[in-house]
Length: 148
Image (tube, rainbow, N blue to C red):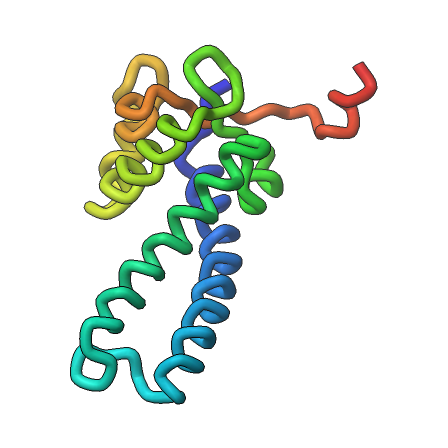
């Protein structure tokens, strides 16, 4: 069953808390190299742009690594969601990377790309369709699936 907007948003909020913690750790490491000075172009020069790119890499890596390993982020586990390929298998690197890029674009303009799932005949959001993936919801906990 394709996941609805509410579950996707709830999982995103859970994940935002964890990603914020990861970004704090990354920022702390960056501040060590700048001796506590703000990481701005005026104080850090070109390193400020490297830092900003690093923030994006940390966010993207969180999602890609989790989707490649199990198809789930921590927030998705809590809401019993899984990201799978069109055939129902774990994502390949290319699909996960495309999903991150298209997902950022789908959520950015007031989540219009995600709300598209209510108009789509297969209940897929824009980034689902473009990356040839889907987010599914299941009602059976993993511990019960392992027994069968």
